[in-house]
Image (cartoon, rainbow, N blue to C red; front, side, top):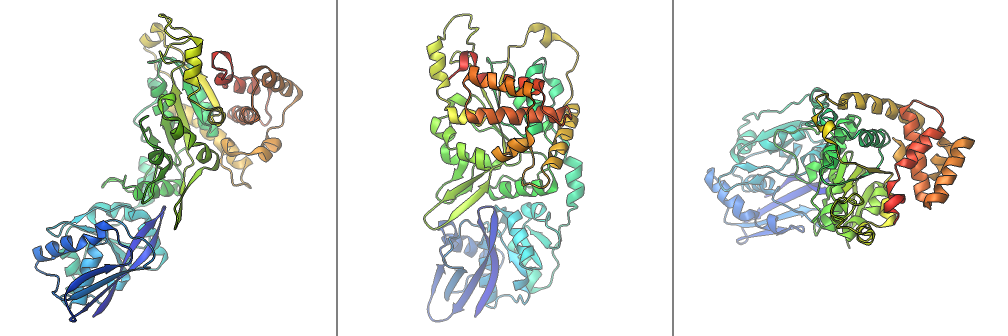
Length: 511
């Protein structure tokens, strides 16, 4: 007897429906699995055999042929255990399931028949709805994630016996219903950190506000203990809240990577990723034998924080150059290509020298040459892609001991939101959301300068020997500063402040 069961495979951040054909005949004995399965799927026969035996069923001693179509697409992981097991039971007449074709069935089996969670549930559920399936049957731990998708029945099960009883005896399964918008709105403003906790550093806070308002990349340069990491961790609290569309995009990526918790349904705050400096190229940008999203994709619509940037391997930093410009990363293999979105705000930090205290080193342990060699770990093209460079000074005792709280993230965020609304209105006819995304054509159109501003930036270009890309960055940042003041035109003091945010192009850091 031949039976067809439907599962799903992940490709990038989208899913493709897989038809699992199970054929059983009496012409011999054997278990044959075809359709480019990986080792985890090939081992499924052992898990399925033990699971069925422990719930009162068995794999028949006949010739079993299982084809996973399309046969030229590689299938990965253990998430097909449940669908293959149900297919074997139906094909061997141990159960009856006339409506099995109405459902996507996915889950990893334990030897006792219980189900383990799987990856990529959200894109699988979206694809199931688009292809007109009535519902989806999943491990209970994954149901909140799948329930984000409306017009699709989502059933969570803890044991394969529940699925068997559902099809064979009509025993109902509990449907999971989630009010996505309500849950999204309830958690959208929950942040673990607040800018009011940061003592002093008013200049750095202002730079962070400008960066958040325009979506600009920023690097903080200062001695150890000056608060660089503390400032970076609070950036998500002043960024605009995620839209529902952005939340779905972000959740899909984390779902594919298996980073969603059992109690998490929809990501409601912008992600903050802080990889260690020992990270590899592949772990940062994504890839591998079976491509997975990297840290830059997990930071999509959020913040990627690189603490002590010069300590990262130069090759790791250089692979970020193209994603920083294109806001997506392409992983190419001989037989396929995968695209992962990577539109993130880069926040980096670094010490000014190996000792951490140049040029104010009390022990004079760093020379100008040592500092230059340390700085040369960062390439000029990469630094050019960072719009804002800020020096973070040591916090004085009087500031640390001050009882008065600083400005709250909520108040800073209000100004950022006003600036973002101005940008959304300005770029409503373009595929641009904020100032950091504008190109040369938009700079000419939206960043016109008066004579005073033009002369000021000309002088800065000549004196600091700035690159053409640095010139564009200054204009973008000046546009953002003007938006924060709700000024239609870029004025000279906007240009002046933007030039101040190019620390690495001047003084001791002129590499």
